[in-house]
Image 1 (cartoon, helix red, strand yellow):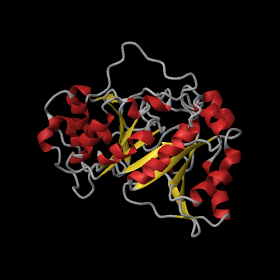
Image 2 (spheres, rainbow, N blue to C red):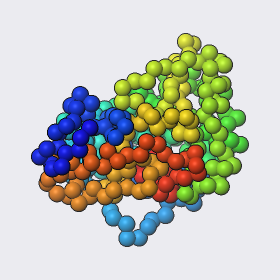
Image 3 (tube, one colour):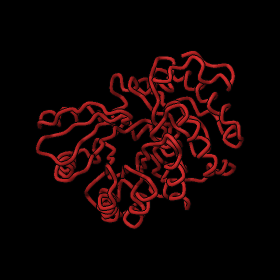
Length: 342
């Protein structure tokens, strides 16, 4: 792809059938949009001491700024947006944000990730606002262990939220479970059985090293390959990757109602199929979750020159690195996953 030198020439040299691509040809269709870095849980692998406000930080993006961003990305062919945090639903205007983004021309799929806070009461409103799929963090099915991991005795509340999400008619309800050696790895069989009996998807996610959890990672990291081997031994079969899908490798079983996915960022060639970009709650474009930092788009998000914004996104995306450096013990500038939306 040839990078245009002026906003008016932004599409010159681009293959319109390919959309937004980087220097090695990866196509980007998926934007993870963080609404806030605030979270009300204290998960051991992310914010064990809880959220700590940093004085002097910019306020989160306004709805108008987010709409400008999503419109620009949609012009470049991105059609899937996921609302993340922190905990995105802590924003009092969350439903209005969802409704506004779902209405942007070109956005065909709006998803969200949540810890389940208020889900039981608000699932229907969020579905009506245009959110089509929802990911819910459930790191344990044991109430005491769930409380130990998250800092909150809310498993029953979260599971009521899962039921409410299914009743609300979301196209897909997914559970996210961070896989931790010596913490919840003895629940693998129970969690797989739970999903097999319900029309749900479960994502096992490897613990990822960040700047704030180095010791925790060293003690509790468990490779996703161990889960994959267990699934294959039990007759689960790998499914083909769907257009616009996230990073999970999915498995199905002929006797199971649900599906299992594995997100294993330490696996070989994990970055080869990357199709997503990230925009932080402060308006910084992150080309990689474990990159060296974000590039501030906020001045352009506060203006009216959409062509300049589109041109900047194209130019920056072309510089995306071929892969992260996690295998070398380098997690870039990411302090913790809540900081830029995971």
